[in-house]
Length: 400
Image (cartoon, helix red, strand yellow):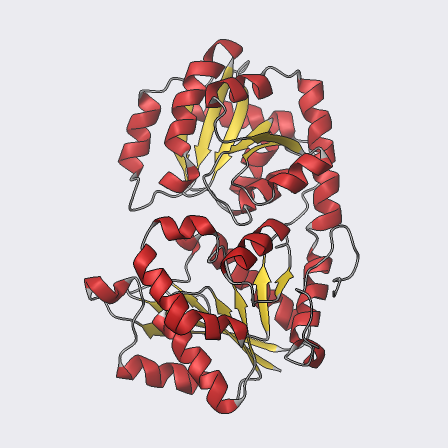
């Protein structure tokens, strides 16, 4: 099969969406299919790889976030889709996706939509009018006619159904690499402490993610300083800056927040070393429809402290992989409660986190789910019925 994915601003700085598109491509190719990527972007960005097609969209301020496509870009999209057997659309609310749906109707080509949190009620707290208009005039048909609507967690699927009851979500957890046992944890911690000029007796907590208001990283840094200083901890903040919070801004906040260190973005083996060094990861975001950092930490055997806005929170709680911060709680008190635990207790919770990751977030499970997605049975030939949901703990996707 010739399968084409389409996304917006497909680049490493895009965070989870970029990684998910890459994972889909790798899984599709592992199944013997062709996987190409259309990157619709309003700026001059590098291509993902040799299999991507760069589609420029308007830079006009009012239409830029909508990724409006002019005549030339429309023609480029149509040409790139010629002869494809399946289209995978990453997200709603874009003109390019509307064009894809129109092409699919004309040519009877099935398409799947990966929501990436697009129907979470939180996303209507900004650009609300535009999104509601899009859903009313474009989105409902766009989503209802999709062969599959894919969510990363059960919680995301439930929230999506609260916005659009006619979709039939398929839940597929994104995969993360399961790291080897943490035999080099102390060595990694000592190396990082020496590099950052920290005392060797300091214990390390970690934040990983975009430096963006939705991540509440500024609030985390300030609460951490109030609570963790006397306990002998440091918070390492890892991630790329954003338009909303610049590198200079987060550096200034850390300078005013003793015990917090911004180390910038880290990737690959270097990021893995930070997971190896940390005793706990904090992710207190307003919203995460998955949370790659949370999943990666669990895979590395690091216990996680997450907010109830992280859609993996219920599974983290049920598996014993960490702790959940609920809205209305005092953040500093929550941090103290976690960091006051002895090393052995944290290590035991980390072990549970690793086991949950191995059982739930493996690459093999993800490939099996993609195989179901691309099979002819999954492309519009299912009887109308209950939502399609991947069952917790099951070895195969569960179809209801």
